[in-house]
Image 1 (cartoon, rainbow, N blue to C red):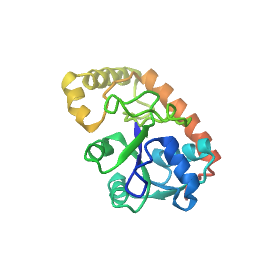
Image 2: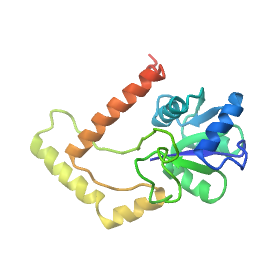
Image 3: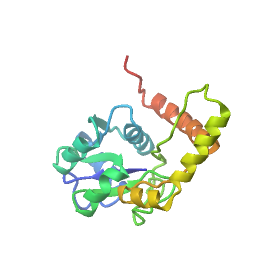
Length: 201
């Protein structure tokens, strides 16, 4: 899950995603946002919001979340889109304001923060980590590995250790993971085409 954040460049009166969209319309020269990399999920989420709000927004690409947040907190960019694991501590410290999260439901770590859809933008994106094996791996080995990884991901100790990082350990089956992959490929292909985003050779 990602968070949509604003920093000190954005007035304190901007308390919601709708407020931020209105501020961008009133300040088109400042309508930009930091991302963790060109072509990454945060970049695509920014494109989705711009399309949904009928805005022209300029992405500012950084090599990772740390420098992006540093410039957000330092007042060099007005907004940023980051994984929730990178922003929880900064939000609690008051260094940034989280306006919305990108998941289909609210984060258990930020129950008072609305989803992008609740905030009025048709944006839904979740970051995930998965495990892949070569295509030729025998089915019996795939099934054994799947069972072990699912078991480990659901261990109370693993869940407890990941929770402070803003990570929910689920342990999906390979069938469920395949559905997530197919949905994401379709979603991001459409966004890339709409934003004229192309791979660099």
